[in-house]
Amino acid sequence: MFLRLVYVSNLSDDVSHENLDTIVDRSRARNERTGVTGMLALDGRRVLQILEGPPEAVQRLYEHIRNDTRHHEVVEIDRRIVDSRHFGSWGMVRRSMVDVVMLAMTL
Ligand SMILES: Cc1cc2nc3c(=O)[nH]c(=O)nc-3n(C[C@H](O)[C@H](O)[C@H](O)COP(=O)(O)O)c2cc1C
Image (cartoon, rainbow, N blue to C red; front, side):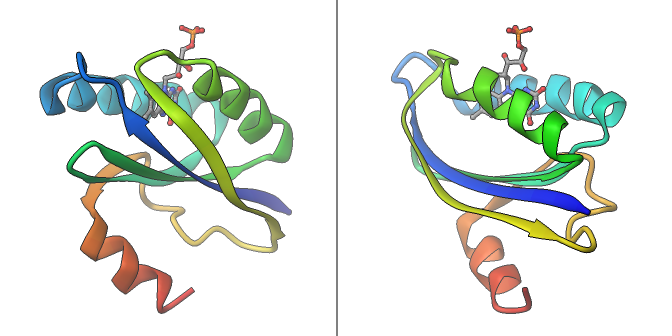
């Protein structure tokens, strides 16, 4: 049983796409330790992130993410318990928003 949580946000003005790549790289390592998978999509400054993993791990991570000042207007758009991971083989990867829409059609 896994929790899949999806939120959107806006990157803060002082965060470049390169900064975000660093965040994603660090996240990948940390997520591997906590068993969290998912993806992060970017469209301009708009972020959409999908997190999935053990419910407590995802919830704890989301609390951190929500309080992170490098983005704002964090809005949870979906939270559901799922039987299997949809992004299991993706540690945490960055994708374009178009890719995410294509993937959402197969969910
Ligand atoms: C858009 C965005 C996405 C993030 N995604 C993750 C993530 O998937 N995993 C992660 O560990 N940290 C992620 N972070 C970083 C966390 O907010 C936080 O900095 C990190 O968990 C370390 O927390 P700490 O510095 O309070 O220990 C993200 C930050 C931003 C701005």
